[in-house]
Image 1 (spheres, rainbow, N blue to C red):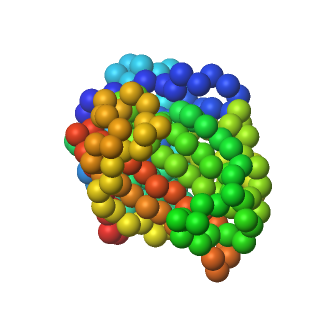
Image 2 (cartoon, one colour):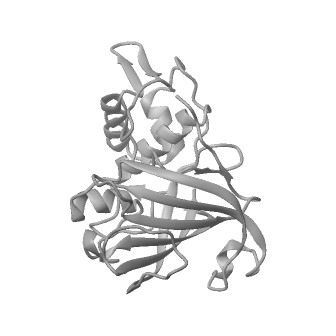
Length: 243
């Protein structure tokens, strides 16, 4: 097993702890089928050296995986993958459907802009307020830029502080704003890359790319968030797995 892991360059107190990053990377490798059910992981010291993390950090990550049901730990024998483990909220990125072409990849995000604006008439209905927070982000997998996101969160749900939002916006919703995204509806197609796209995607604006529209619900009957994602099909795939 060879796993590439580079910790997030965000060293603020609101970034995800290294052990959580390692745990999330391993979950995505399991879900991608690169770590198969019943597979025995390498010895912990070997695995920690391969991934470039401290042994204590790795053990904490493996404990997190075991708590989520993705790992079976047998004293004196080793750590074994449980592909059928976990639940709907076992991973911070359970609803993040983009993966590297070979599968998996640790998601990260760089916020480009946060502003409160009137909801454009062209967007589908979501939330009850007339305004929403618009969040534009550059998404990466294993530090490879793969997508642009534009997220609209209804103002009734609270303010988004870019200084406190970590890689997982859904984790920020839970941790800071006090609500969970419980379900989402995606529509996948093709659309031109927007004009505000930074050069990091290696695609010119208006180039046709993969496109995902999403409506998300919390604990209410109506959706409270709308988002659209433009992704580079040369760098990422949209993956939906049935369990």
